[in-house]
Picture (cartoon, rainbow, N blue to C red):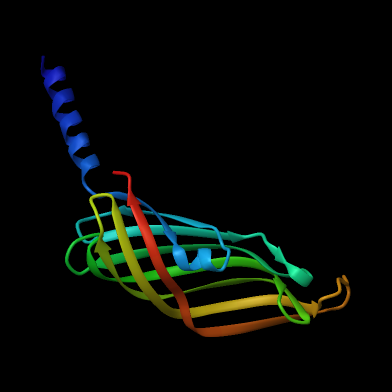
Length: 178
C-alpha cells in the first residue's frame, strides 16, 4: 500500500510539473528571412533561470554560385527579472560556427567562436505560444582561408579577424510542449 501511495504522489508531482511552462521549442523568424532553417530548445533550470540551445544551418547556393553555407550553435543562459518565459531577461551566450562561401569575388572558408550578453523581452501569446525579441552584443574570433571565387587548392591566404558588435538578433516564436 505504501508503494502505491508513493507512486501516486510521484505521478501527481510529475504531471503537475509537465503542465507548467518548463520546455519550449523555438525558432528565430529573422533567420528564416535569410533562408536559414533553425531550431532551439529552452528549458527551465529554476524559477528565474533558463537554458537555451539553438542551432542553425544554411546549405543553399543561389544564382551565380553565391552562397554562404554554415552551421551555427548558440547556447545561452537567461536570468528573468520577474518569472521565467515572461517579461524582461538578460543572458550570456556563446557561439560557434563553421562557414564556407561568399557573395562577392572572394570565398571564405573558416570558423568562428565567441560570446556576449543579451537583453530581451518575452510576451505570452497563449498558454502554449510566446513571442520573444532579443539583441546580443559581444565578441567573435574568426579564422579562415580567403581565396578568389574560382576554386584553387593552393591559391588562398590564411587570415583571422576579431569582431565586436551585434552577435544575436532574434524575433523568436516559442511553443511550449510541457
